[in-house]
Length: 347
Ligand code: F1P
Image (cartoon, rainbow, N blue to C red; front, side):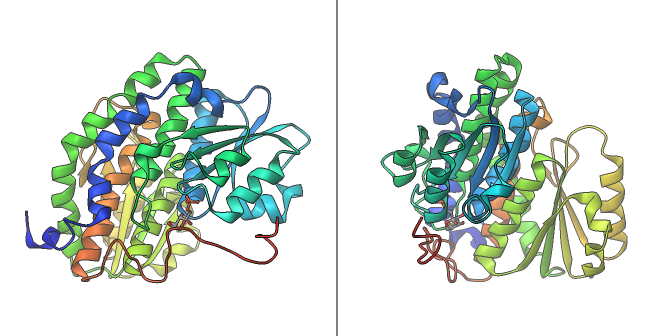
């Protein structure tokens, strides 16, 4: 193991990143009926959370809409509380609230507020939490909790739990079979992803980073961007790839890393964007099933592959943290649970 990793190998964050093949296996083994709680009857699905858990909600909404063919959206928990008239429609809702801790005040309050519009489901790593108590049903993943401040395995396991629930509820054996390939794909990929993460982190030519993802992968790109931001205080942003051309590309410099969470199969317009950013001196890195800097491996389609994009990018953030001599378990200015007072807390 290179000297870079030695400084973080004992960290909670490293341990939790490397534990994902094991925790994913446990999540996939959960009772199907419990996982199906996220699937609505005739309600519209609204996913919510805060921070990483809001980005998780973004990805989950796209994947649930694709798997179930029902209306699904994602909003930050603060919108549920502050502008409910812009969140709930006349149609009954099923609010799926993500929270690793189950104690984030906005999320717990949002769950309570949503009960007058329909049913509520908690997806959490804390079974005996305020959120699980506030919801009509709770999908509990105690095996997937992170002790570290930053969310890593908790994020991917809560996403996987919702995806498995959608596959079970729709009776889609093919989607379920592909999800069951994920733990082995991650176990096989981690050593190489670690090497690539170190190589990219050591590249001296970037100081800001942009992450590109289409559809559900935009929520994943937001999470990858937040990881690097939380752990190293770098300037990072996430964009839908083609949206980047509509203004944000003016931020491009020759000290920019652009990471593309690439779907499998043809993605010519996105590949063209990566070619353009490289021509302008940026460092372009792809994460994709094949022919990529971070190679995720074959055999799993775009839908089921979603969780697999996170471990490589969590390792990239960790490698950069190690290079900066920072403590990944105690990121500057952050706590494991955000507590608020005032208007929101009183709800
Ligand atoms: C939400 C959250 C995380 C953030 C940090 C503080 O936690 O805001 O998204 O990265 O860890 O807590 P939770 O509601 O999922 O417990």
